Image 1 (cartoon, helix red, strand yellow):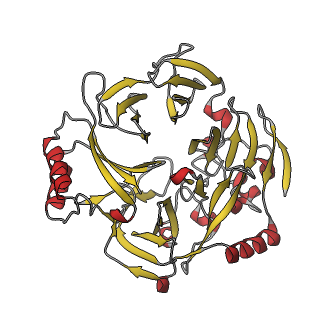
Image 2 (cartoon, rainbow, N blue to C red):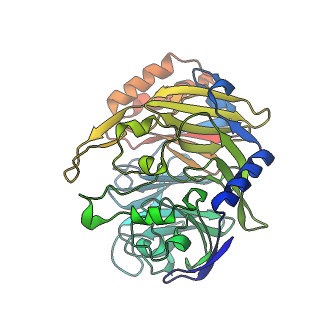
Length: 445
């Protein structure tokens, strides 16, 4: 069904949706016509860990150069291209460019209020074909810089809160097309709830919307979603809704695929049809809980016992999924060739945090949700912190106690590449509190 809509400051667009029982029947038919990833308890093979070599061809151990211009206080965003590593820091609000070997090259743009500067960096997108970096700022609009950090042009003066309605937003460049992805769009007033709760926007170079898509799980719930949106003036009285998980987006093998939160399909962008089509269906025998209950921002502890898929990513032969049921983290590897599924379990830790304006505590996972990868290539374990089109990246912070523990883990583990294992250990032993982060870049097959 196509609904004509008008969004303030944007173009008239169309949203492709299904609704009601017709949509449910379409989903059933869809599940019968595409491969199914069956996560049911009796269909998975239980294993201790998932070997990284199943998905990864080679590994690069890259210490990022630390000098007077390139000291990184933290890393809040990272992209890897064929020749460069791009790092965003939250504290400095800056973008740093390093070579693939870790040598510092330059920063992108300047911080300030001038016409060629930006403030309050939100996100950045690297275009390796045009050799440009798009910088999205919360108050400076969207500006473009070249690889050397020089200002090129402004794409739009609109700030992020005029482009999206969601708290978590992602910008993706795919085949010279710009896509904006947002989670539950509830942080600003919504005038047309049935028509404007979009999850994906295809935008032109000036960030005017060409086409919109809605998360299928929103259909039929638009009124509820708007009713439970964030109301800053009444936080004490209203426990507003939030997304159960981030929108998961993957660009492996030059294909744009994604998984909407709260849905049971993986979608792929069809460039000929300019549409997202279902590629895999996902089934399980776990309870998922009531929609409203699991979407509460301040959740009761029992809602974490429901099964929730938190992450998804692709490789040549496998699709990986991460989910939780209580504090148990399930890490799955689905074999594309024969349809078998392996599962390794890790233990997460839920913690409560007191909030001054709520009577009940906020509950969430401490230190994220762990992977179950064993780094059988050069030793130890592997935790994917960031991903780019052809690689996964783990960030090792210069924290002496954590590094010492990692060294012990690597020393006592077996590795397919004994020489690289020793190189890995050497880099770790040379790290200190004055070092920048070291990256473990896993290059996919």
